[in-house]
Length: 192
Image (cartoon, rainbow, N blue to C red; front, side, top):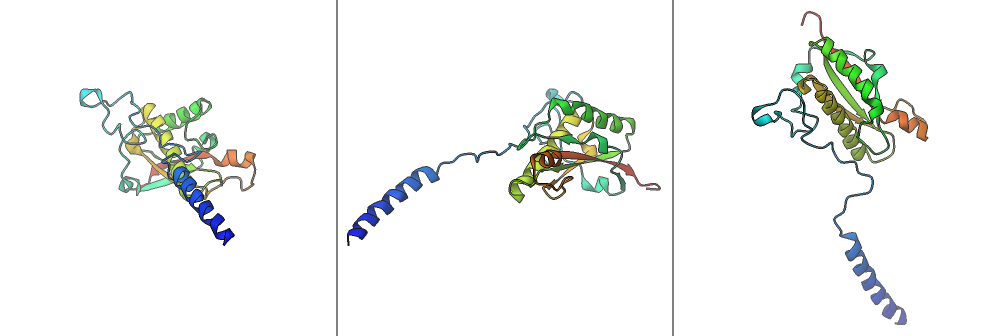
């Protein structure tokens, strides 16, 4: 009987504490926001000085997948220009600007080419979180290329999350290599 007299007040106190602290609406630690909307682009401004689709993530409307059907992948062409990200971030570092400029130059030199940006993460985090972060990273690169004058309709993005590591080790060096965007150049199929 004495135990029951102690259990009820303790249970009630625990319920009050959980209700007071567990119901707060807060952002989980370490969540990277999707790239900001409205990153103003320099060319192709529409009426009123606004860019069509500027409020869409990645610098404009997403490219139609049907426009990428008759294309051949060239993974080697831009493999040297992979960009890397800090842990839990989709912010492109200034040290990656030269790589992005090289990708933009390759696209500007041949208007018939298109691009796939593949966002990747390290193994830490849930599957859902890493898919979203990989998508956020790919969209950030798409937006950066749009600011360099590349039509966003020539670019499609995809996220592999943690599914395609370049280094399968479980340490910071491997994780740093796996937090990346890969660029895949697409050429029209011959005869298409």
